[in-house]
Image 1 (cartoon, protein in one colour):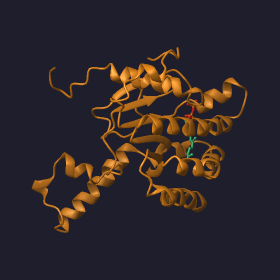
Image 2 (cartoon, rainbow, N blue to C red; image 1 turned 90 degrees about the vertical axis):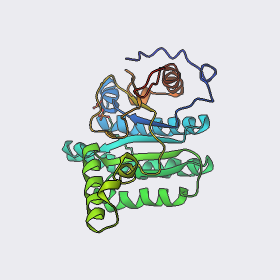
Image 3 (cartoon, helix red, strand yellow; image 1 turned 30 degrees about the horizontal axis):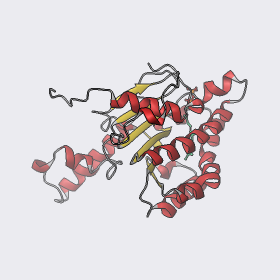
Image 4 (tube, helix red, strand yellow; image 1 turned 180 degrees about the vertical axis):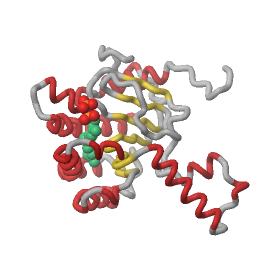
Length: 248
Ligand code: FPP
């Protein structure tokens, strides 16, 4: 468990060995707010500022993609008022920061079931994706109404259907073909997964894609996660011995 010591600076990391794709479970917004006697929604609001900060820094460092767990299929179990608040955050986020993301060549993308969101939320996210689709910098990917098991079932159904329709042949199914049916198709392999707030579990996030990722769990709540903490995570990643099942 990474304790917050914030001793790392950009000078400590090897800029030639930056993880190509970092996944974040941005946990702890509610507890961050509770600690300040504020409503949980205030924590989510603060959490969007961290998304902006970390996306811009990751982009500067040359990270190719960053996937952030914004709403899980299980999050529908939260009180309706909180769910409604979270569904309004994309509007606020893109009103405040879309131009800055465009100016920094960031491309917005998403995985998950956007069709289950209110129409206004769908439109805001679709418009951000449309306006940034030609950008070539960081792919800022929101996992929104996303669940890892659901994604695998979805991919399997589509692949089976294509086999029935004669578009695919069962004998040709391999990992790379299966991956092309996942929602993350086109994104680089995830090399680092960071979960904030001290919890140490995956919570149904990117179950297939995280097979060989390095995991870092930090005790910082997401609104407190900052650039120095990102450097620290990258430094730790660079000091891990990645063997992919082989020997070194
Ligand atoms: C985790 O904190 C955070 C969430 C479940 C959702 C946060 C969602 C956003 C900030 C929306 C962002 C989306 C866009 C497109 C900008 P928690 O509530 O689980 O915290 P806790 O574990 O302390 O209760």
